[in-house]
Length: 242
Image 1: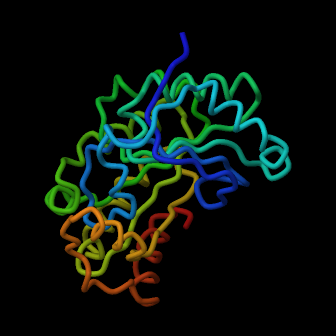
Image 2 (image 1 turned 45 degrees about the horizontal axis):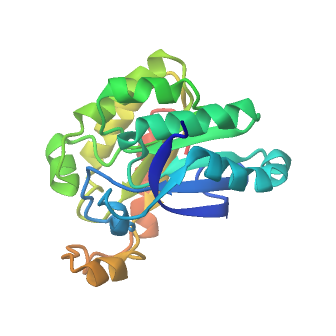
């Protein structure tokens, strides 16, 4: 039987979610409620549309030449892909059969056992660590950061390449002590290829308004160049590539 999943949308030629030109699959459903989320329309798994892995593979193959030329592949993001682990596992398994690079963009907020089979067919993990400080993380997302940090350690233990993503939000995730604590934690992991510091933006604010959600960061500015440089220097101090 075909494996089905619920997706929000696809993007055929993405260039920022992994190496090269990538086919992006945005899955539906997420257990986090991040204050700066730019895809709040992916939160409810009951929304979106149902599709089969075979339907997606048929679309993906149309762009295989672009992926091969650029060193790209398929990235599954969301939402949170790992709340649909069987769907993502089968999609990645079929991608690997066709020689297509696979990347998983995840918050890591899932039981580790749900991720292990998916990771067998995953070439790269884009791991979003919202904050190393447990209270800040809880305030920001509504959940604990423990599963995310546990996944990060597991990825290192099994030799899985990862890019760490950190969204820099003024007056929320810009505390130098918290960033330093994260950098210290990361320096003990063996498979981090780079850190991506993502400046906070309000591109998704209109979606919050359309959905009737309270956007708490409407008065929060984008981070200054100085703030970005401060964060970069902290990570660099721990010999982490930015």
